[in-house]
Image (cartoon, rainbow, N blue to C red; front, side):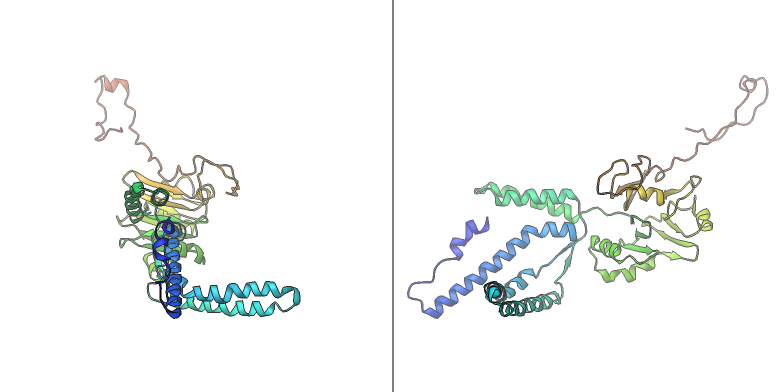
Length: 354
């Protein structure tokens, strides 16, 4: 779409009467300009997808690509062609060696650019709605050949607003219950891990728009002892990760949510995420609301897909213990004679069970 509109203006021939050096400089400058524009346009077109899946974008990618263009066009690709042509004669190593030098130079450029401050931008996770609206905006901006394409501008604004206000969960639990992320009063995720799981932690940090080295300062938000760990959400809600039966007995009824990589007895009247729950839902994210916990499981507990590798049948009640129903209060039965006023009865309870 860009080339269709602007290349005729960029690729004008040199002025008449220009010297050979001037014409060569003009052609070289246009070549670099078109390469830079190509990289820039391609980066814009794919930025939202890279941000959605990998939570990152590379603001200096145009610089790296333009610096690498001479090596790609003059060394790497000619070396590849030369290697293929010399292959029947047994001298193809000449082409591959030439190609290898070019690739080493390209890697050196990439390392140099990536070392610049701010070369790796990170963006917090956002919803699929932002991705769909961003895709719609991209199509509307590029496909129409008339001013109708300007209708894509409002879609761009909406997509950016949705990206900026992506979902933020209060608790995140991996599929084994060994890694727990907790939203702290500072708005960041604190981490508790029972085993080394660098991949999960770094992915969760990326979804928060944070670099991998931030994990060292975020582990300190949990208070742990030999029996287990506890943490608090922004509203003071207590989250417990017990390690043994004694801690579990203490946490049931006291903590708003108990997370364990083992099965928790039904008698525990706190909200529970245990091994049985995670077997049905996989990794799960939770948001604290006024009515209880709102869950976003990585797979539906009531459906099945070929790629889930589920060991048990889908369980529609897998999340039933997340918002347990509190036991009803019981009122002693009063004899009919007492209700009729024939005999004095017990005082009426102060609160009626609704």
